[in-house]
Structure formats: structure tokens, C-alpha cells
Picture 1 (cartoon, each protein chain N blue to C red):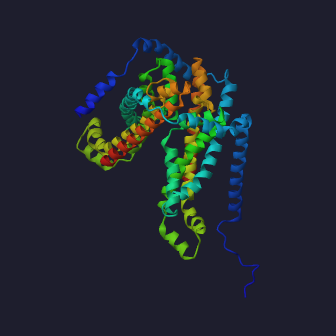
Picture 2 (cartoon, rainbow over the protein chains, first blue to last red):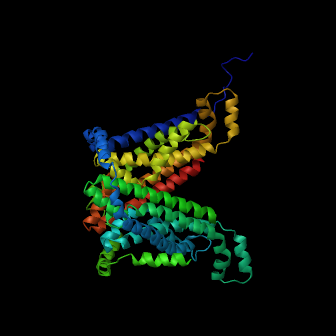
Picture 3 (tube, each protein chain N blue to C red):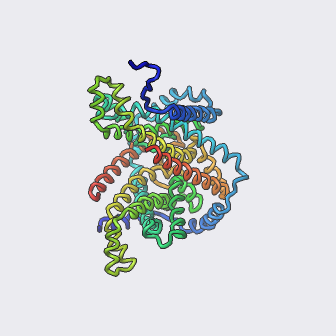
Length: 269
Length: 242
């Protein structure tokens, strides 16, 4: 007969693990509560309590949509598509050399060029395209050009990061085989590397184009042209029934671009 | 091919550029680059600090709230766990949350809840729900069904199946996704301030409007630094968890 007292009962975690996990969760909860208090310090709760009434009020103003406004939206829609497409084009063109300079196996210098290329990628990626647009509108003035450059600058980091990861994952044997034939550096890139990354390249570019369509619909809020400009003017005149129409146009555009990019990626991958 | 050439010509022609304005702006652009290289952290530090605290608190609270709401929705949107009506309902919530940009949601929520970080918190939470529940639901659907069958065969109820068969399989992924979303939420929290939803974006907007490029440069450098820290620490924790 084995007595209950001296048998060890199997446990999933050791007591130490148990305490550590408990402490971890405790800190997370404490930190969240602390942040919540800090954040809502200046919140006016009367406004929050009032929100359902505000929501139904705005909802009432949004419906029915003013469909006649649609006719004024075709030109901004065309502008939005151009911002996204031309911006993606600029971004991709700059991203290709940056990616080759950043990839560990193609960079000319690991200690000097590679960090610079990585810095370009990080800077471009951390700053949202709306902030790029804000800066560019202040610098070169409102209009489509600011939007195109903003989208381009934001796309460099995204495309270059994914592309250099693809370059680092290529099959080195093919590179060696081409090198063994006496090929120069440019020929190695042309015959050994590019064929391997081409499908990834098209996939990444179309993926970014799809994201850029979404982003370019709102760039106009800060003056960079496109649908956002109409959104801004409708919002500032409190024309909520026009806002509804714009939202629906944005929604339709996003759905179509997502469908197109899914089709293209299916075709190339 | 020729179609894309025609499109390019049409598109480039429809871009009207006021080259004189651009030329004038070049000097300002140069001043901005100088401001970026010699950032001024001190003269607007009070405003920057308030904006940063708003951004950071918004990021954490909205991620936590987003995860708490996403878990039930994610389970409901997994085909192998939820009955058809629940599945349809949860999927439509996900689609709704994913189809609109954070900025657009922020505009609506600011007009309902007033200016400030509370509207930003709601915006980021709403956006997190779509992202997290979708990926969580896909992960649950990819679960090893043998384990689910084994637990079910022992006579477990639905709740016990979720707890003993599904939860251990998806937990590392869920933690990874939450950290990834934390990263995204910080990036977004620095933008939605432009439409009044609190955070460092509002401070940045003001700095640029006042042509204080050295302060704007300082804010951008801080944003880049925090994004880097969050990104690297979250990818480190993710590797450690998985």
C-alpha cells in the first residue's frame, strides 16, 4: 500500500515555473491597468456616455447616401489609382538596388554598404505613408505629386525588405554553377539570381500595390490628392451623406484591388 | 504590354505639377533634412512627452483589449469548432473590421466619442480584432485534428475540447500574433493623431504645420527608435515562445 503523503503527484509545471508565469501575467495586468488610468486621465466621460446618441445622429445624417455626388468622384478615383500605381512603380524601382545592397550574399560590403541599405529600409518602413505625405505636402505643396512620392518612399522599405530576404534565401548552387563558367558579377545577377527571385518579386510588388491603393484613398486628408481630398472637404462641411458615398467607393476599390492582387499572385506563384 | 504604356502616359499626364512651387519647396526640404540631422528634442519636449505617453498607453491597452475580444471571435470563426450561424456572424465581424483603414475608423469614432486617446484606443482595438481573429481562426482550423478527436473521444464537452486540445496548440502562435499586433498598433498610434485621436501624430502634425522641422525631426527619430525597439524585442520574444 502506498500512502498518499510521500508519492509525488505529476505536475505539468514545476513550482518555480508556476510562480514565474503567475508573476508575468500579474505584471501584464498591472501595467495594462496603469496605462489605462494614465490614458483616460483627461477623458471627458460625458462625451463617451453621449456616444450612442451621437452615433445615431451621424447615422441618420449619413443615410440615405447622396448618390448624385458619385459623379464628382470619378476624377479623384482616377487620381487615387494613379497615386498608388505610380508610387508603387517609383518605390519598386528604388527598392531593387537597395535590396541587392542589403542582402548578405550580394552586398558589395558587409560592414559599410549593408548597414546604410538597412537604415534606408528601416526609416522608410517605420514612417507611415500619411506622415510622409504630411511632410511632402509641407515641402513641395499639395497635389498628386506629394502623394505619389509619399507612397513611393513608404514602399521602398517594404519591397526592399521582402526582396532582400528572398535574395538571401536563393539556392547558392546555381550561383556557383554560373560563376564556374567564368561569368562576371552582373552576369551572375542576371542568370543565377534574377530567375530565382522573379516570382517573389512580382508577388511582393502586387501585394504592395494592393496596400498602396488602400493607403492612397486617405492621403488626401493631409492634402495629397485623390479621394481623401473629397473626404476632407465633405467632413469639414459636415456633409455626412457624401461621406457615405465616399466610404462605399473606397470599399469597392479596396475589394477590387484585393481581388486583382490575389489573381495576379495566384498566377505568378 | 502596350496597354500598360498607354496607361502610364495617361497617368503621368494627369498629374499636374506646379514646378515653380516644387522649386520653392526644395529649400524647405533641405531645411527639413537639416532638422532631421540636428533634431531639437528640448524646446517642445513637454508636447512630445504627452504625445508619446498617449501613444504608448493606447498601444498597450488596445492590444490587450483587442486580444481579449478576438479570442472568442476567433474561436467562433473557426470552421472546425463553431456551428454555421456563429461562423457566419464572426466572419462578418472580421470582414467589417478589416475592410476599413484605421484612419477612417478613427474619423468616425472621434466624431462620436470626442477628441483624445479614448477614441484612438477604440480605433486600434477595433482594427486589432479583425487582424487577430482572422489569423487566430486560420490557426485553429490548421490544428492537428487527431488531438481534437482524442480529447473528444474521452467524452470531453465542447469547452473542454477547446481548453485541452486546441488551446495548447495555438497558444504560442496567439502570443506571437499579439506581439506582432502590438508592433503594428504602435505604428498606427503615431498616425491617427492627425485626425484627432490622440497620440504623437497630433504633436507631429502641429510641428510640421508650424514649420518647426527640427522638432518634427526629433519626433520622427523617436518614432523610428521605438518602432525598432518594439520590432526587435517582439521578434526576440516570438522566437523564444515558439
